[in-house]
Length: 96
Image (cartoon, rainbow, N blue to C red):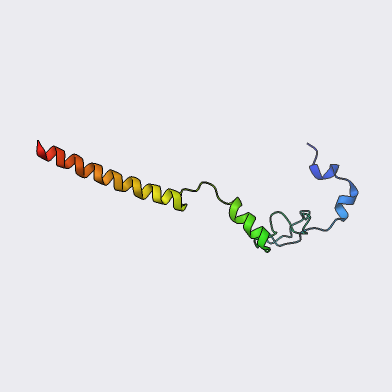
């Protein structure tokens, strides 16, 4: 079986590498991404910096809306209705 790296063009070997120390203590030899960091050793995202980016992040991370004001009030109203229903049902059953 041929090794993958044998098929790479020679200019790939002269490109800069990540060179971060991995868990075994050896240096990482992966190619960096556009930002100059390795995909594995690049670190965590620092988040949005601009107001527009923060706004987009806030709206982009909304997945359902079950905790919105509207649904919270709906749940409270439903619980109130069910409590009244059970009280009414118990009063009717006591009457018999």
